[in-house]
Every structure is written in C-alpha cells, then in structure tokens.
Length: 305
Ligand SMILES: *[C@@H]1O[C@H](CO)[C@@H](O)[C@H](O)[C@H]1NC(C)=O
Image (tube, rainbow, N blue to C red; front, side, top):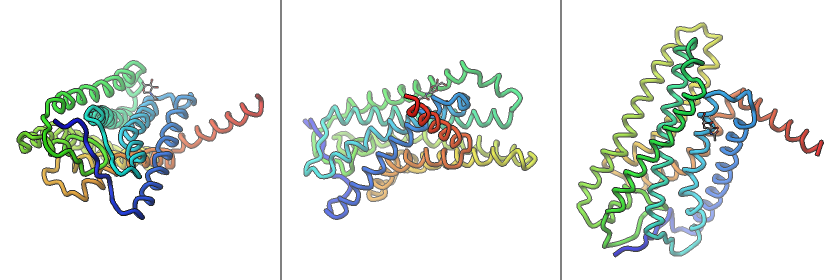
C-alpha cells in the first residue's frame, strides 16, 4: 500500500538548484503581484467594469490559483533531500489542477466569444453581454472546471497503488501518477487522453476557428478602427497559444518525452501565469491608464490620511 509519493524534483545538480530556486521564487512573486494587480485594478476602476475586463480579471485569478497549486510546494521543496507528498495531498493537487485548468480553458473560450460578439455583432453587444449573461458565463466557467475536476478525482481515487512511489517531476498529475498504478497502464492512458486530451484539443480547434472568423471580419474594416481591436486580439491569441501549447503536449500527446515533459510542466505552472498579466497590461492602453489612476488615487489617499 502506498501512503505517500516522493518527487524527484527538477534537477540534482547543486549549482543549478540555486539558480532554479531564485528563478522560481522571483517568478512566483511576480505571478502573485501581477495577477493581483489586474484583479484589483479591474475591481477598483469603474471605467473597466465591462465584460471583457471582468473576464480578464477572472482569468488572472485563475492563473494565480493554478500556479499556487504547484509552485509554492516546489519552491519549499527545493533544498529538502526527500520531497514527500501524502496520498491525499497528491489527490488534492490533481483535483485543484484540473479545477483551475478546466476553468481556464472555459474562460479562454468565453473571452473569444466576448470578442466575437464585440467585433462581429457590435450593435447587439450590450444586449447580448448584459450583466446577468456575463455573471452566468463566469459562473458556468467555474462550474465546468469543478465538474471536470470531480470526474478526474473520482477516477484517481480508485487507482490501486502497490509498487514504486517515486514521481519523476515536482507535482502530482494524472499522466504521471497513472504510470505508478498497478493496473493496466495502457487502458488508463487512453482514459486520460480521451478525457483531458480530447477536451483540450477540441477547445483549441474551436478557439482557432473563432479567432480566424474574427480576424477575417476585421480585415474588411477601415484600418483606423481595426488597429485597437487587432492589438487586443493578438494578446488573446498569444495567451491561448501559451496555455494550449503545453497542455496539448501533456494530455493529448501519446508519446511523452521525459525531459520535455518537465519543461512543459514548468511552463504551465510558472511561465504562462507570469506572462499573461504582462501580455495584457503592457499592450493595453486602458489597463495602463487605469493603473496610473489607481496609483494617483492611492497617493492622494495617503497624503490626505
Ligand atoms: C469575475 O466575473 C464576475 C462576473 O462578471 C465579476 O462580477 C467578478 O468581479 C469577476 N471576478 C474578479 C476576480 O474580477
């Protein structure tokens, strides 16, 4: 009976350890700071109270949570000889990873839908995306992430583990943990590929199609009006690629390559959540002015009190 798992971590070399530790520590601080800044800016600035920015703030919150499932434990584990996680802790990581990951997948689709309505049906935008609809979309985003996570957990709870308990990475997730279970690994792999794999691939195709339609629509516009829409869209598309590129390789690629696998896991848990706020804030004028306003307001507030 296996009651705990042992992570082998990212690397054994001492010099590399220190470098990686600093890299991940600084990145995680950046993730917390950047994503919280977006959530707070959108919440405080009434100019940004529109569906697009509500969705963006929700995406930031999800990114923050997603990276908090794996990154803090990895950072805390860096210099410990034996990186242990209990069986329950491992299940919790699987559940939360799929909860936030599933929610992120759906919110990216919701953001594409929002842009589709805004650009292809501009006259009906405020009627279609009214307050209740936006709240409903966000609620169903979190809801479907939850349902997906429950299905993955129900599957993982019943896996029998009797043999080795060393996981050659820094967090628990199904494709890794399944390899240690003492039932037919081939059948289990198929289950992961048909569930998370098909979900990611189908959503990705759906997103590619929607952004293609939106881009084609923009092409037929006078150039002055389309440049702002184009810069927003390019940010969305970059975020979609950053999220789906690694996920498709992790869940839907049937021939995992060990070293690449670890790199992609790092990408998902640290690089994507760090880049998302950068992509959205650096290129977005409204977001930047809102942050300036927030700072001014903050300074005034401090001077007065
Ligand atoms: C998420 O979206 C909902 C619905 O629009 C909004 O009310 C809420 O403030 C958003 N959450 C965050 C953290 O911004």
